[in-house]
Image (cartoon, rainbow, N blue to C red; front, top):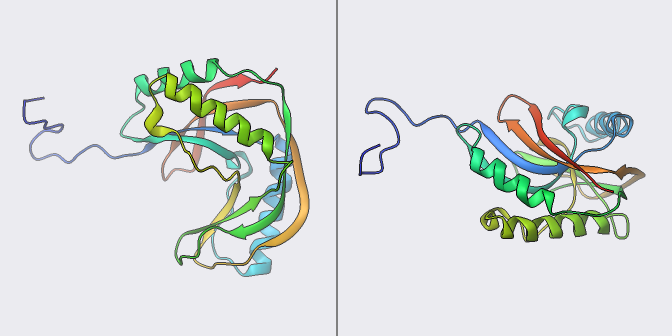
Length: 195
């Protein structure tokens, strides 16, 4: 690279941003299937056209660590250092409402939400992980405003909040995930057990 800060060769475009990193908690397989079935049911009920997420992609994002062209080893290393600082027991998490996020039209997330106390433990995990990320050099990726949710699908329709039969699962770990943007794939890079 020359002193002008040029990062690509003349005549060639910048590399495509296709790699996303984030921390998340995932439901167990049976709960993921139950959530996926609910997504299909609610999709039909509301007349959504958006495709529901596959069961293996249903999750609660704790912190988004950025979008990149290639997986940055330094971010992965700092994320691992932060995660290694986290201790705590497994906990239950529950969701009892479905709604559209945001009032804007377009690619609007349709999500599951929950109330305290079903959600408080994951809020605490997200906060503690954020503190550890700050200590590891990832402060700019710490999300200060956290609303735990599971995205079911994206659609251009916006619907009001509705109650659902509660869906709960036990969280025993959190995961550093590499998502291939536009390819609907999540690749776990590392897992940390809560004990």
